[in-house]
Length: 366
Image (cartoon, rainbow, N blue to C red; front, top):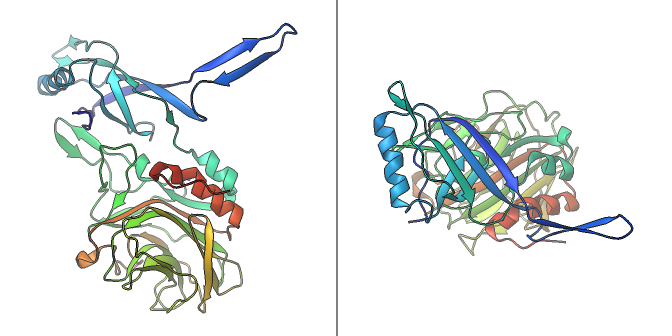
């Protein structure tokens, strides 16, 4: 019963403390040396929750949840929507107290993570890998708000969260549909209807052959129809920059039309396998380079005539070529979608791969 989500969303205040286990040794010369007992960048979170006023029904739901966990014995998932902190596997660390005033309940809950975990990457790590001036977009499903309240899912908004703060793509149809919300890391799952688009044009890209890069973490079953995973620009041959999974079950660039690509392609023959994918265009060039798991797999060229336009996720900018449209695959999961207005170097691609790939067991590349 550990794979269940904390059931009450009416939260007035959350305090998260990041705990570490460090031993400090003192020496006769007055110097000290410190060593961690846990793996690098690993912490346990202590979470103090103050609920907003709850109805008697909501309070009963919380009491029942506490009883079904055997109080402080069994673990469960708490999703830290307030801090965009993703899922935390926790236990109650104090008895559930019931405070009632003026006809409502205002309980306080104490939780603690069951074990040390590598903290999810923050935006400063992205900026260390690629300058903040060049990072236009970072979509991370772990940071999306997903609310469960008294047994019902309540989606709090109709937009995706961009960790760079530059854009907020708006769901045009569907909504955030995680592949499995009760696990450590989740991804965006497309079932043919979920696609999003920015309200404004992406002005960080300019000129007919701008430098640009796209980075994704992706896992897809075999494809029987072409679908765009992330793209920016306009419809029309050469007018966009994007990445697609073709009807031939191959990852390839997409530049707004029905271009044919050779060289910079990656077969999805081993389907349902997590991979990092990076597509890079240099300025004043028609050539795209594809990297898979931090390694270049080749280059290919098609004439570019890029046009300023909006960004689309899991579809082309006009809503066509939707991910998993008409059941073109059994499962479509995309995570950590990023856009940059620079041509990433191999070292930068590797840094991004290492920054997020560990979440799905991808090996570190040197």
